[in-house]
Length: 335
Image (cartoon, rainbow, N blue to C red):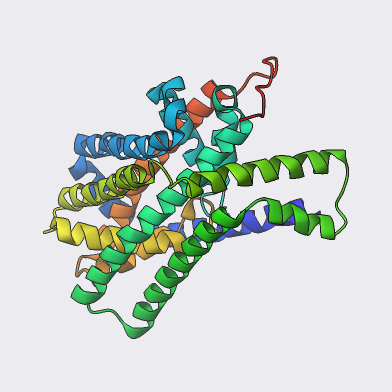
């Protein structure tokens, strides 16, 4: 019943988002959108392909955290696993968490289940910490250079502060144990049984591995943060080229401000599937703050969705290609 209720809410949110997107399209004008896309021409496809370099940078950020085990997995396979999980994160509203267990599942024959889950959990920390660093610099620069309405300024600061606090708590829980407390809470509620106990034991072992990584100094974390930051700045270059394709007088500084604020909007609209409508409306609003035509803001958003959907499709193809065969023996869970 709860699952059906959750699916109903998801569909409602999707329909609300789709309605908002349709309204934005009607307001901006399909002819204007078509003209902008035609003017961009084949260059838009080049920008879409370019973003693959940012995706590779995120993959390398994950790879360095695998330690000596990174040599067991070809880079292109890890790249495919990353895209597969990222596609699920895009499609399912979960705060970019739904695809992480799938990444571990796709690597279970290479790493084992526990080590795979350990790697994606630690990499998620690296990814989110690098995002906070990026946002702190970019949003501070935006607040300094742009004239924000008071309500919007406070809303931006609220989302940024909430994101920063959430990441700090995530890091603290990783060191103390993030999975075992969940199972202990469920046990207090009366959940029990052989399978539950087996999962609980696995959760304890997972927490031990994650805690050991931090206790031993977090080897590779600095390098991982660097590659993740490169990925975020890949989004800045993409924004710059898209702005230029729309014939707007944009600089890298402007693109950095835009990307930072757009990332705030994405975090605030995570509960909508694909962030449909919500992120599009946010990008239109950011365009007005930058002094650009709002209708071009919608065209920019559609161009970016072309990139997002392209790489989601690639990720889903990898998911179909890499999914474990049921006839294949399951790898050991031991680290």
